[in-house]
Image (cartoon, rainbow, N blue to C red):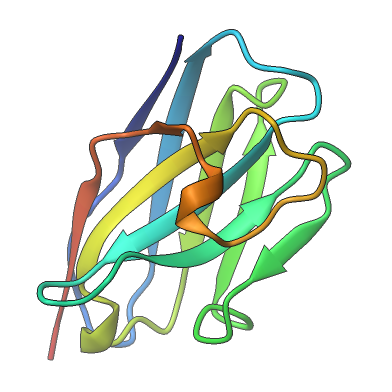
Amino acid sequence: QVQALESGGGSVQAGGSLILSCGISGNFRQTASMGWFRQAPGKDREGVACIGEAHEIRYSRFAEGRFIISDADDRRTLVLQMSSLQPDDTAVYYCAVDDSAGVCVLSTGNYEYWGRGTQVTVTA
């Protein structure tokens, strides 16, 4: 079983920055991919960024240039650095693990293990 626990959410003013972290525990394959997703009220869950075993990275268009995904602690920590935040970034942010991955993809259906999410609120 794989467990993912997000932290770092909160309220920030528009234009500000925030760093989210996710601690990952349990057993996962060497080839696992990890990603960040978000869901705003009334909207579908969408991919933000992912990072694969070979440290290839994929960003959604809204995230590219503003967000940075990285891992640390032998892939036991997943980090999302967010800058230039705007109210449309308000959402619950989730980290997830795809334990059957080769190259990471930003598709929710590919990820087997999910954290509970952390709320990010961007105020004007």
